Length: 194
Image 1 (cartoon, helix red, strand yellow):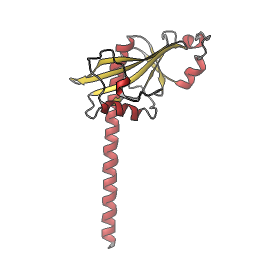
Image 2 (cartoon, rainbow, N blue to C red; image 1 turned 120 degrees about the vertical axis):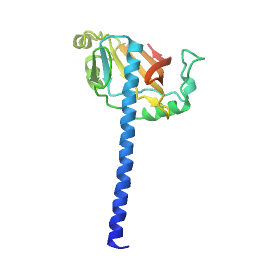
Image 3 (cartoon, one colour; image 1 turned 180 degrees about the vertical axis):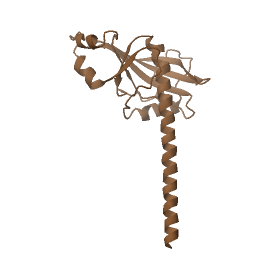
Image 4 (cartoon, helix red, strand yellow; image 1 turned 90 degrees about the vertical axis):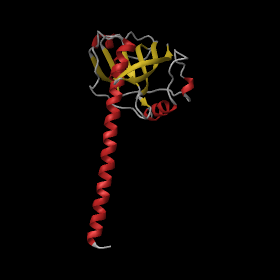
């Protein structure tokens, strides 16, 4: 192989790598934008308009083995497709760090979960005085899972939890559909409550 052929071959490989990396980056940005759009649509519908304390990073505990174990409130209503459910499980193998990209009509703060653990004990006798002193307008905090999507990105599944005391935890699976460019909640299922 001549030097010019080696150079051409190397340039071709570099070009192919940069095109693949660029398309993967574009895809990752598009998924992240949809993830924030899902959170922004879901949070006010599930929790109403209030001051939100949102734990950072995303968090997912527990995993149903099948989409059929999610007991949606509307049994005859929409259910997560297998594609959406598989993507939900895949994306929740790691946590994601949230940034201030939520479009909410209420005030919100993103708080490192490590800080929440220092001001809100998980012992039943704790009264959360320190948490309520620091965030007086927030009755508790919200955790969010990563969002699972179907291939067309017009169906999304997310798990959210509201914690207001060690004995007050409510989790909800939220199924959303995108129509006319907007995400709408189409079904929910209780995940846990104590």
